[in-house]
Image (tube, rainbow, N blue to C red; front, side, top):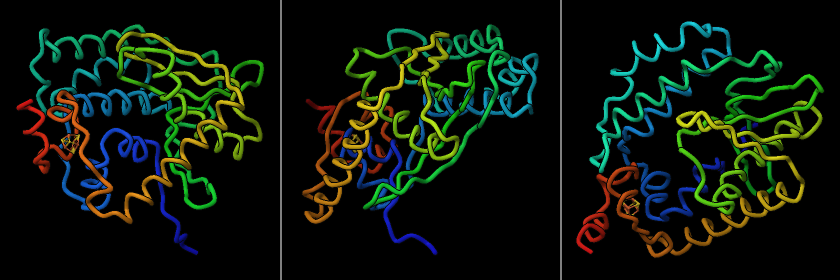
Length: 254
Ligand code: SF4
């Protein structure tokens, strides 16, 4: 039977928190969004790592694949900045793949696992980059991020909600929660490891339910429920509804 319940991913919930108007453009108005170089870059490195983890590519093929595919995968320009972001990102991705040693110390349990979890009023959906098992049989969720790092512990905790929510599926499928959540910040070749705890899991579930309630309340208000929240760099470079948003100019003129 097809569920009547609304489905939310972490990025969908997060978009509402970032800019309710961007949420409305994408999920209610369903406008054709415009991608950006950062998103394309992240997708390409994810794709190479996915193919490695599935055994489609060997360690020795990662760098050549990156070089072969880069131009056709990253078609949007990086924004102008005080440094050459295009060269920087390209070099950092290449260096990561050159230095990457594989996951030989782990058993790979799942790659790009797509799941749905019923959270009562709604369905939570996600795709887990990697589920690993270490030699002590501890499960680990690993997520690739193209960010260079987190600005604060608070920001890290906000990002970790995604992996805590994913741990609900890991528990359902493998019988236990992961013991670690890992962000692989690949541009910096840095792993941020978080010891799993149930208090943070509950906080993530509560956050998720609160945002869904806010979205439902916003929907009853029509346009007033989805005000634009402008942050110049995000508006002009990252928001995929940017070509459909009149509020973007107002931000530029401030
Ligand atoms: S361009 Fe800015 S204000 Fe407009 S929808 Fe996107 S994030 Fe919101």
